[in-house]
Length: 163
Image (cartoon, rainbow, N blue to C red; front, side, top):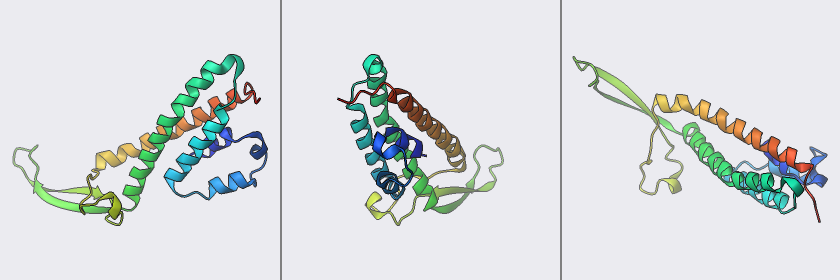
């Protein structure tokens, strides 16, 4: 999801080879927060330059990276909650129906293995089927935003003036 953005932000020496130390290092980062930090650091290095008559676009693009990376961290954490979670079942009346039949309700709860995240032992949230179904759409939208950001940065590259 973030490879295109990483490539767009690379400085010229690291862009030509998929075997560069920078590309290898980024590919080896499995932690979402470390990947986001690396992208944030690269964006600071990239946008420290002047961009001539595209400076306003560069400034606006630079401002949009932080919230985009925050969304990436949030959605990736949600994905991890789902991937390492467990399912619960509760039987109870369906109050939406007049005869209130007993129905099973399922929820996917985040994993207890992430104890630092849940200091009191009980996850703060759980996900029902409707939530989970919407995640794929949200992930795809985020992926498209990241790809669009990478494209904008690639377009700005031609105006980047290193002093």
